[in-house]
Amino acid sequence: MKKIISLSIALIIAFSSFTYASGDSSYEDGFDAGYNEGYSDGLSSASKPKEPNIIFVKQEKIPEVAAGEILNLTIDYKNDSDYTASSIKITPNFEDTPLVYEVPVEYEANKSLKANATRAASFSFKIKDDAKLGVYGIKFKVEYKNNSDVSYSRERIAYFRINKEKVKTLVTINNIVTEPANVVAGEKFVLKFNINNIGDIPMKGTYLSLTGLGTDGFMPVDGNELVYIGDIDAKTSVTQSFTMNASKNITKGNHVLGLDITYDNLQSEEITEQKNIYILDVLSEKVEESAAGKPKIIIESYSTMPNSIVAGSKFTFTFNFKNTSKEKSISNMKITISSDDGAFMIANGSNTFYIEHMAPGEIVSRSIELNVKQDLTSKSYPIDISFDYEDSSANSHQAVEVINIPVVEYSNLVINSVFANETFLGSETNLSFDYINMGKAKVSNLTASVEGDYTTVQSINYIGNLEAGNSDYYDIQVIPSREGENRGVLVLTFEDSSGKKVDVKKDFIGFAMAPMNDPMPDDMGMYEPGMMEPMMPTEEPLSGWAITGIGFASFVVTFIITKIITVKIVRKKLEDEI
Image 1 (cartoon, rainbow, N blue to C red):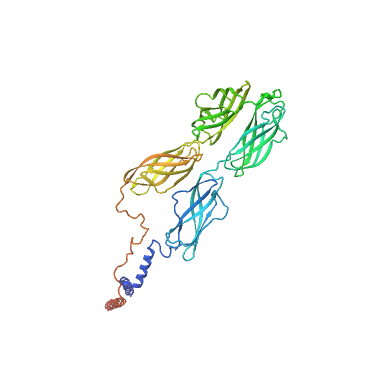
Image 2: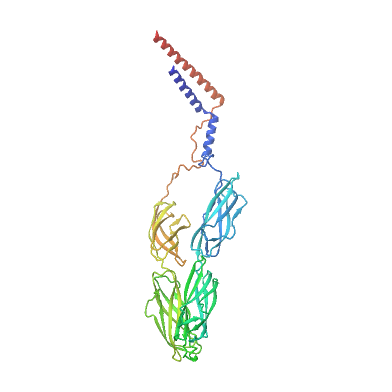
């Protein structure tokens, strides 16, 4: 009996399979619809969110701006989806950027943005005065809705470059005069001078303090050597005076006082700069007034060749000096060039000059070739020029002038090797290279590009900074333009410590094969409409009456077969019992 039941179940399953193969139209139609919808774009309809996708179009060129200036930034944004976006709001985030936050800034688009459409948004930002050189990214919060009024929020980034810093506060003093012109031992005099902020950043809360005072030299009449003069704006000058006493015991000749200038910068850091004030030709009590009125020497102008001086290089220093007297001539002048800290050394010849005679008002020029110490950092270094001479009455005089020469740190970026991987014509490949900073200064804002038979995939390949003595390696994506051998030039561009852009180049050779005729898809999982169709029967489905008839016939055949088998089994069992 068990055999009969098992056989019946098998026949029922066979009948069901036959019915499905014959075509249940309702089931088949539902399967086809689900299959085609699920693969129409690689996602099932249930899992695919109907979300617009607002992206920023890649910047072809990063906008550049100087510290303290206004950045006008235009962003092209695109709806990179198949759904319309509405109520778009783009708001910048000022964190981690050298931007001044004055009032809330946002861009709002009331109109909708259709699928694959592009629009522009414009912003204006104030760059901080103390912003440093470099490439910065502004994060934007992008908010929008879909057609079902569902809200979305995404973060996007736009880049800009600061290409010039504001010059650090640079303080000088000039127009040093005394009233009367010649200081006499044991008498009062007024010391006047100008303090010049020739930089781009204001000096906050400035104090002046005289040093080098003493009872055998100079002392302020009121005993107060510290004076508060307040703020000094950029590109401005302030005149300051001290009423002084010259000691009766002061020695004849030239004297020097120190001046400490203390102020705060933009970061509220206290800075102190030390300057020298020279008081020349101090007269003793025994010197008569007729000794006054000596001819004076001043540096009228100077120049360097080249204009930009790099540590470790050589340059020519030219200076023009003038006899300011309208009546007295000068003779037997000795000029000595020196550098106290060894920043500059004589390249050829001697550091002294001899001038036999200078007429009243005459201007004379002299040049000297100097070597620059290689390990100097970027700042200004003094050159001292001393003048020893006699006037027409054979009186000896001395004058000292100090010239500050700006020096830039030595930069030397070296590309060790460049290798382009073999690829097919028109396809992307890696260009690998390694480099080392063999200079004394940090390499800033390093970028990579190529010239020749290759083009870069990205318009901007920003690498970053590299400290002195360090090395690194990098890969960029390039595309060959010809079949066979391709010749290119790798160009690394960086900014030295003065902000000047420097290019370093190295040649390389790569190879490109002919493109394949029948390329296979890289990823069979990436389905596109028409790429493949569901493997389903293509025959026309049977009608309802035909299916019913086939089902009834199958039932009859099954019943007859079952009955015949049952009768045979029962008959066999009876014969065995007999």
